[in-house]
Length: 280
Image 1 (cartoon, rainbow, N blue to C red):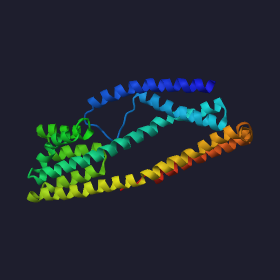
Image 2 (image 1 turned 45 degrees about the vertical axis):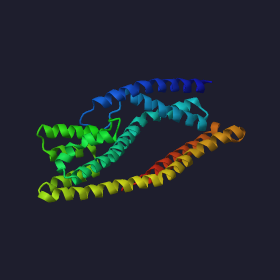
Image 3 (image 1 turned 90 degrees about the horizontal axis):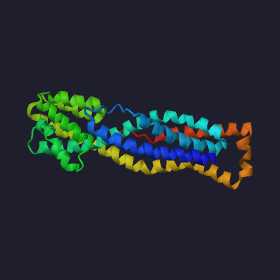
């Protein structure tokens, strides 16, 4: 009964915090200027929310394996470390999204240059084309090219504007494009061809990476299922063979074995995540 009450309280708290967090995120997103994509600042509500989510999961795992509320609560304290892990995941997710949006921006720039527009003017006009491409207009790349247009309009050098975006994005593709763009400014009439060739190379690289990610998506799902299977087996044995499993929940040796099993499951999860990370 106590376990059900704890779960109920945490679930209600998560729902309430989720509503508040969504409102804050929308407001924060609207006010963001010159975003540093290498950093993600979690709000207090986000930290509490992610800690509760991880804590609830670990509590359930602890109760499933230990059958002890005290030990489950102790294990759930590890959830306090989850916001740090989640922050890194959010940074990676935002960068991945920005990379795909940057590919679309490069396609827009390529089309403009092919139509006879100068590379600098192609960058200035990219924002309007991207707004036609993204109907909702809330993508980070639109904000970035809008800022570029404003800064160039205030007589900032286009190379400085691109370098600023490159540093904040933390993306290799943006850095490569910026380097080639800056170096090609001294090549005269060949600048357009050099930039178009570079865009083709970068777009092809991003598309290859996307294809690889789609190919391993099924394997990632299989890995998640395999990581989850021990918990299902443990739950099934506890329900169907309670007497057989009792020594694991009561004896010191049994709990030591359970602890080792949990550590091995954690290591297996970490290894599977590392294997699935593919860099192109």
